[in-house]
Amino acid sequence: MTRRDSQIAASDSLTPGRISLEKPAAEKIVRRKLSDQVFDRLRELIARGELQPGDPMPSERDLMERFGVGRPAVREALQSMHTMGLITITHGERSRVNELSAGSVLGRVDEVARLLLSAEPEQLDHLKEARGMFECGVVRKAAEMATETDIADLRALVEQQRAQLADRAAFVAADVAFHARIAAITGNPIIAAVSQAMLKWLFQYHDVLLHWSGNEALTLDEHQEIVKLIADRDGAGAAVAMRAHLDRSNPRYQHHG
Ligand SMILES: [Zn+2]
Image 1 (cartoon, rainbow, N blue to C red):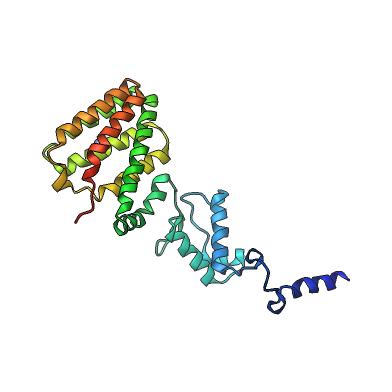
Image 2: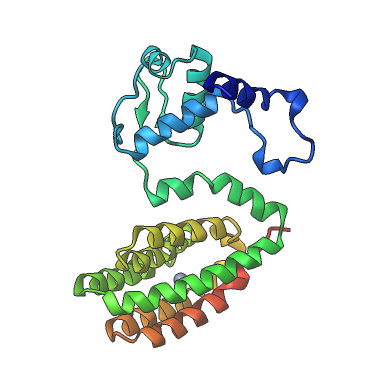
């Protein structure tokens, strides 16, 4: 068989009429949308660092030439990148590559997370459980790593929260800030972002006005105790104190009627 013959034979085997029906699904050739292929190429340019955060994206015309595709495929790919938060499209200006952080990535799923939690109430219990395990691990690590500045900041946050006793919303916000500051001690941006995200998702079920008041003093005592254990480098003790703090306050996060 000549080289040309074998090429023809190979291409013949791809004509629809000759494909054996028994072929496993994995072998099937999937025709992909042009815009998806453009999207993959653009994502690679970002992954390789050829396009850096803050850089303007090449013009539609440049991309059409570079990839040999029409304007609709380029536009659709750019729109997908915008929807995924990889670039920002501003009318009248060149699109730009976004800076990604753990916080910005998790922030993009906020709406979906809210939907999941309201559509399936049992997910709220799963979230409480996950947050409990997470916060206990985080505080243990924070007790190992905390600097004098970290400890001074935590003490200041407890006092700031004490100053908000008359304002329930501010009191709860100070609570969130306290837990976020503990997560920041780990120096791990993913831990900090996940901790913040879980608290934010939980927070929407925190019926501040109905459930919070009456336990402010207890909350402050618990926070103070946690800071003391972190300052003592007592990771195990801090984890136990955190567990008790969350178990006490967890029933306050509930679906509103
Ligand atoms: Zn707290």
